[in-house]
Length: 375
Length: 250
View (cartoon, each protein chain N blue to C red):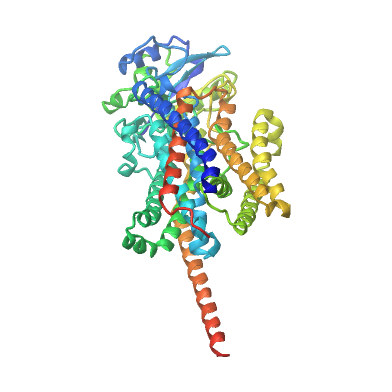
């Protein structure tokens, strides 16, 4: 009885939220119509000098943010750390929706979207793009199998879910392997652009740096999402798990910073910082609040063990990942070529629509199916 | 033998006949020799600080565009041209990101856009004819021939009049070399003309990453399987130990 009265303000807030999401989807559908009717030139700010823009930035960031799925599955099924069990399904759902959105947004970006299936039959194995497409496609299949467990369980098809559970370890190992490959190959994509991508970001270590930053950013994103689930989805984020995630985030951010510093020193890039103050400012914006600051926060035991400290670090790590991918996909190129780019309203509203669709599906799935398990 | 073009900026008078001949040959619309390349302009002549320089696809010996294209829509023909297969293209524009000379142009205004660039008159070459631009050039600034012979000619020109030329054959080795060679009075890379940052073929930059995909994959899967097995075994041993302890006092 008391719960009814406490829920009503949340419910009206929820209604406003869903109205907002629906509005974003509606505007996005209109923008989609324009995009496919009039073409990329009329509806985007892309050009020959800036061939990849907002959509590719979000797509590549989203791939990295989805890494929480394979990380948690590897920790639970391979390393057999029991306390992660309650969040495996949430992590897998995040990755599943994340990759679905990657596919959706790429369809908008492709000049010939009807040819999207060509990588299935035309292969150029020298291309890191082909390797990335295949690994992502295969991993999406693995995620689909993993997702089938809560789906079949929720639908009451017990035989299926029991059968599928036998393969969880296999799914976890296949998922981690395919993820290690494509998260790093996305860095390989940019290795061809020597001289076009600013030397502050260009490095032969890009594949391993992309992999390491995806680990930290993806963990941060999952943590952030779990806090939101606690707030809005009637789920309790176990305190000991918050602390474990704090430690994990500390380790992964530290791993990335050490790799990044080693590479920076190895390549002797300190002199470059003075050459181009604009590029250096973008780099500082990415590294200081996005990597160094959350690391400092997490070094304090009191913050590492508190919900607020872990949450703040997770937010910063996610922002850092967004900025890193922005710098590598766009800023690092634009500063070299002196081209101009600012996304059009169609690009922005389609990106917002894709985000809204993801949120709607996530919330719907979390409500209908056993995703957030009681610890 | 592979064909090539030698462009001698010293001999170019900027008449734009090459650009016009290209438009006619490829049936392209628009004025000849506009400001820059475009979906219907495969070559232009630029005046840069008093010298004339042609801008068009260099037809790299190891093309970055061809190695980057996921579906193999771009490839190099044995006699020189780097050509595009629109039937395969998906429109990802990775070739734009990869090209060290920033040459490809997109049909942005179309809703079925294609990648557009010079095709080295591949069709004419297959008939044994030179490119349209070389055939029409009134001063011989654009020469068509065997790559090896044109390199000898370029070296001869530079060494016989060293005061006339910057001592570098652009495209001989840059980015692994290209089928378009250029010589000029000045260093083209310092005149706002994009050049590859290395003499290595650009596909060699991504090759190590691609070659290590399979070993890294097997290694990751193998290590994770091994870890899973050992963690599981440890649990089993611990459980047995526990059971033995429980039994003894009972």
